[in-house]
Image (cartoon, rainbow, N blue to C red):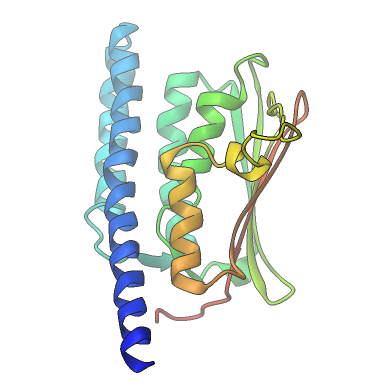
Amino acid sequence: MKLLISTQEKQRKSELKTLQHQINPHFIYNTLTSIKFMMNQGKKEEASQTIESFIVLLQNTISNLDEIITVEQEIENLKNYVQIMQTRYSDRINVHYFVSPTSLELYVPKLILQPFIENAFFHAFTHKKAGHIHILVAEKDNFLICEMIDDGDGMEQSATQTNAPSKKNQLFSGIGVRNVHERIQLLYGLRYGVDISSEPGKGTKVEIRLPIEKKKT
Protein backbone atom coordinates (compact mmCIF):
# COMPACT_ATOMS: atom_id res chain seq x y z
CA MET A 1 0.00 0.00 0.00
CA LYS A 2 2.84 2.37 0.87
CA LEU A 3 4.56 1.55 -2.43
CA LEU A 4 1.33 2.19 -4.33
CA ILE A 5 0.81 5.56 -2.62
CA SER A 6 4.42 6.53 -3.29
CA THR A 7 4.14 5.54 -6.96
CA GLN A 8 0.91 7.53 -7.37
CA GLU A 9 2.47 10.58 -5.72
CA LYS A 10 5.50 10.41 -8.04
CA GLN A 11 3.17 10.09 -11.04
CA ARG A 12 1.13 13.08 -9.84
CA LYS A 13 4.26 15.21 -9.46
CA SER A 14 5.51 14.14 -12.88
CA GLU A 15 2.18 15.02 -14.52
CA LEU A 16 2.09 18.37 -12.72
CA LYS A 17 5.63 19.18 -13.81
CA THR A 18 4.73 18.36 -17.43
CA LEU A 19 1.69 20.64 -17.28
CA GLN A 20 3.69 23.47 -15.70
CA HIS A 21 6.32 23.23 -18.44
CA GLN A 22 3.59 23.13 -21.10
CA ILE A 23 1.94 26.43 -20.16
CA ASN A 24 4.98 28.67 -20.65
CA PRO A 25 5.73 27.99 -24.36
CA HIS A 26 1.99 28.10 -25.13
CA PHE A 27 1.75 31.50 -23.43
CA ILE A 28 4.84 32.86 -25.23
CA TYR A 29 3.68 31.58 -28.62
CA ASN A 30 0.31 33.31 -28.43
CA THR A 31 1.78 36.61 -27.27
CA LEU A 32 4.38 36.59 -30.07
CA THR A 33 1.58 35.84 -32.53
CA SER A 34 -0.12 39.07 -31.44
CA ILE A 35 3.10 41.05 -31.91
CA LYS A 36 3.55 39.53 -35.39
CA PHE A 37 -0.04 40.54 -36.24
CA MET A 38 0.74 44.17 -35.34
CA MET A 39 3.93 44.14 -37.43
CA ASN A 40 2.00 42.79 -40.43
CA GLN A 41 -0.52 45.60 -39.97
CA GLY A 42 2.30 48.16 -40.11
CA LYS A 43 1.85 49.13 -36.47
CA LYS A 44 5.57 49.25 -35.72
CA GLU A 45 5.36 51.71 -32.83
CA GLU A 46 2.58 49.73 -31.16
CA ALA A 47 4.54 46.52 -31.72
CA SER A 48 7.62 48.06 -30.11
CA GLN A 49 5.61 49.16 -27.07
CA THR A 50 4.06 45.72 -26.86
CA ILE A 51 7.49 44.08 -26.89
CA GLU A 52 8.47 46.27 -23.94
CA SER A 53 5.33 45.19 -22.07
CA PHE A 54 6.07 41.59 -23.02
CA ILE A 55 9.57 41.82 -21.53
CA VAL A 56 8.09 42.99 -18.21
CA LEU A 57 5.53 40.20 -18.39
CA LEU A 58 8.23 37.60 -18.99
CA GLN A 59 10.20 38.89 -16.02
CA ASN A 60 7.16 38.50 -13.79
CA THR A 61 5.97 35.13 -15.09
CA ILE A 62 8.56 33.02 -16.89
CA SER A 63 11.65 34.27 -15.05
CA ASN A 64 9.87 33.89 -11.72
CA LEU A 65 10.41 30.21 -10.96
CA ASP A 66 7.66 30.08 -8.33
CA GLU A 67 4.67 28.10 -9.57
CA ILE A 68 2.48 29.43 -6.75
CA ILE A 69 2.07 33.21 -6.49
CA THR A 70 -0.25 35.65 -4.75
CA VAL A 71 -3.57 36.76 -6.24
CA GLU A 72 -2.11 40.27 -6.38
CA GLN A 73 0.78 39.05 -8.56
CA GLU A 74 -1.56 37.03 -10.77
CA ILE A 75 -3.81 40.05 -11.36
CA GLU A 76 -0.81 42.28 -12.09
CA ASN A 77 0.48 39.78 -14.65
CA LEU A 78 -2.99 39.56 -16.16
CA LYS A 79 -3.19 43.34 -16.50
CA ASN A 80 0.11 43.35 -18.39
CA TYR A 81 -1.22 40.68 -20.75
CA VAL A 82 -4.48 42.60 -21.26
CA GLN A 83 -2.48 45.71 -22.12
CA ILE A 84 -0.74 43.72 -24.87
CA MET A 85 -4.07 42.40 -26.18
CA GLN A 86 -5.72 45.81 -26.14
CA THR A 87 -2.90 47.21 -28.25
CA ARG A 88 -3.88 44.65 -30.87
CA TYR A 89 -7.64 45.07 -30.49
CA SER A 90 -7.69 48.88 -30.18
CA ASP A 91 -9.47 48.89 -26.81
CA ARG A 92 -12.73 47.62 -28.30
CA ILE A 93 -12.75 44.91 -25.62
CA ASN A 94 -12.83 46.45 -22.15
CA VAL A 95 -11.66 44.51 -19.10
CA HIS A 96 -12.92 45.29 -15.58
CA TYR A 97 -11.44 43.96 -12.34
CA PHE A 98 -13.32 43.32 -9.09
CA VAL A 99 -10.92 41.77 -6.58
CA SER A 100 -11.68 41.49 -2.90
CA PRO A 101 -8.89 43.18 -0.88
CA THR A 102 -8.82 40.21 1.51
CA SER A 103 -7.98 37.90 -1.41
CA LEU A 104 -4.89 39.76 -2.61
CA GLU A 105 -2.44 37.95 -0.33
CA LEU A 106 -3.88 34.47 -0.94
CA TYR A 107 -1.86 32.04 -3.08
CA VAL A 108 -2.87 30.56 -6.43
CA PRO A 109 -1.13 28.59 -9.22
CA LYS A 110 0.55 30.90 -11.72
CA LEU A 111 -1.17 31.74 -15.03
CA ILE A 112 -4.60 30.38 -14.16
CA LEU A 113 -6.53 33.36 -15.56
CA GLN A 114 -4.47 34.26 -18.64
CA PRO A 115 -5.54 31.31 -20.86
CA PHE A 116 -9.23 32.17 -20.36
CA ILE A 117 -8.87 35.86 -21.10
CA GLU A 118 -6.74 34.91 -24.10
CA ASN A 119 -9.63 32.72 -25.33
CA ALA A 120 -12.04 35.61 -24.84
CA PHE A 121 -9.91 38.04 -26.86
CA PHE A 122 -9.30 35.58 -29.70
CA HIS A 123 -12.70 33.88 -29.91
CA ALA A 124 -15.45 35.57 -27.89
CA PHE A 125 -15.91 38.66 -30.05
CA THR A 126 -15.88 37.35 -33.61
CA HIS A 127 -19.46 38.35 -34.44
CA LYS A 128 -19.81 41.01 -31.79
CA LYS A 129 -17.03 43.47 -32.50
CA ALA A 130 -16.90 44.99 -29.02
CA GLY A 131 -17.74 44.06 -25.47
CA HIS A 132 -16.67 43.62 -21.89
CA ILE A 133 -14.81 41.07 -19.78
CA HIS A 134 -15.27 41.07 -16.01
CA ILE A 135 -12.70 39.50 -13.67
CA LEU A 136 -13.98 38.75 -10.16
CA VAL A 137 -11.95 37.25 -7.30
CA ALA A 138 -13.34 36.67 -3.80
CA GLU A 139 -13.67 34.11 -1.00
CA LYS A 140 -16.99 32.26 -0.94
CA ASP A 141 -18.19 29.16 0.96
CA ASN A 142 -14.64 28.19 2.00
CA PHE A 143 -13.38 28.45 -1.58
CA LEU A 144 -11.40 31.09 -3.39
CA ILE A 145 -13.56 31.81 -6.44
CA CYS A 146 -12.09 33.38 -9.57
CA GLU A 147 -14.61 34.24 -12.28
CA MET A 148 -14.22 35.58 -15.78
CA ILE A 149 -17.45 36.67 -17.47
CA ASP A 150 -17.71 38.05 -21.00
CA ASP A 151 -20.70 39.33 -22.98
CA GLY A 152 -19.36 38.03 -26.28
CA ASP A 153 -20.65 35.57 -28.86
CA GLY A 154 -21.04 32.60 -26.54
CA MET A 155 -20.73 29.03 -27.80
CA GLU A 156 -23.14 26.53 -29.32
CA GLN A 157 -23.52 23.19 -27.53
CA SER A 158 -24.56 19.92 -29.20
CA ALA A 159 -24.02 17.29 -26.52
CA THR A 160 -27.28 15.45 -27.20
CA GLN A 161 -25.89 13.26 -30.02
CA THR A 162 -24.78 9.79 -28.99
CA ASN A 163 -21.13 10.18 -29.97
CA ALA A 164 -20.85 13.91 -29.37
CA PRO A 165 -18.26 15.07 -26.83
CA SER A 166 -19.58 16.25 -23.50
CA LYS A 167 -20.41 19.89 -22.92
CA LYS A 168 -17.41 20.30 -20.66
CA ASN A 169 -15.06 18.73 -23.23
CA GLN A 170 -16.26 21.14 -25.91
CA LEU A 171 -15.81 24.12 -23.63
CA PHE A 172 -12.38 22.88 -22.53
CA SER A 173 -10.90 23.10 -26.03
CA GLY A 174 -7.45 24.65 -26.10
CA ILE A 175 -4.18 23.60 -24.48
CA GLY A 176 -4.05 26.46 -22.00
CA VAL A 177 -7.63 26.00 -20.79
CA ARG A 178 -7.29 22.24 -20.19
CA ASN A 179 -3.91 22.86 -18.59
CA VAL A 180 -5.38 25.08 -15.87
CA HIS A 181 -8.08 22.58 -14.91
CA GLU A 182 -5.64 19.65 -14.81
CA ARG A 183 -3.01 21.56 -12.83
CA ILE A 184 -5.55 22.62 -10.21
CA GLN A 185 -6.89 19.09 -9.75
CA LEU A 186 -3.41 17.60 -9.51
CA LEU A 187 -2.43 20.21 -6.92
CA TYR A 188 -5.56 20.25 -4.78
CA GLY A 189 -7.85 17.36 -5.69
CA LEU A 190 -11.15 16.81 -7.49
CA ARG A 191 -13.11 19.29 -5.32
CA TYR A 192 -11.35 22.07 -7.17
CA GLY A 193 -11.05 23.04 -10.81
CA VAL A 194 -12.79 24.92 -13.59
CA ASP A 195 -16.45 25.10 -14.65
CA ILE A 196 -17.44 26.80 -17.88
CA SER A 197 -20.93 27.75 -19.02
CA SER A 198 -21.86 29.50 -22.24
CA GLU A 199 -24.93 30.62 -24.14
CA PRO A 200 -24.92 31.70 -27.81
CA GLY A 201 -25.35 35.43 -28.17
CA LYS A 202 -25.02 36.11 -24.45
CA GLY A 203 -21.46 35.21 -23.54
CA THR A 204 -19.37 32.83 -21.46
CA LYS A 205 -18.69 32.42 -17.76
CA VAL A 206 -15.61 30.70 -16.35
CA GLU A 207 -15.52 29.81 -12.65
CA ILE A 208 -12.30 28.60 -11.03
CA ARG A 209 -12.58 27.01 -7.57
CA LEU A 210 -9.45 26.98 -5.41
CA PRO A 211 -8.64 26.34 -1.75
CA ILE A 212 -8.02 29.35 0.47
CA GLU A 213 -4.23 29.32 0.87
CA LYS A 214 -2.69 32.02 3.00
CA LYS A 215 0.85 30.81 2.51
CA LYS A 216 2.75 28.67 0.03
CA THR A 217 2.73 24.94 0.72
